[in-house]
Length: 79
Image 1: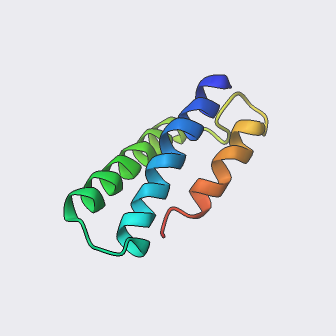
Image 2: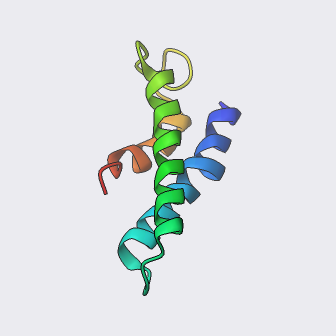
């Protein structure tokens, strides 16, 4: 549980946020930053996709705080 919470808090969350910032909000387009953060966000989503193949929840057989924490990032994956 703690590993997934850390993955979301220190990995997916920050990289996805930076990806959105550099692609949509930064005052100047910096291709290096746009590509770096987008690729890292995609890599984090690949980890989630691989882990969730054949699973309904991130940890165990029940809905947990890890699933709740992940939902905000998973829901926004197309942004």
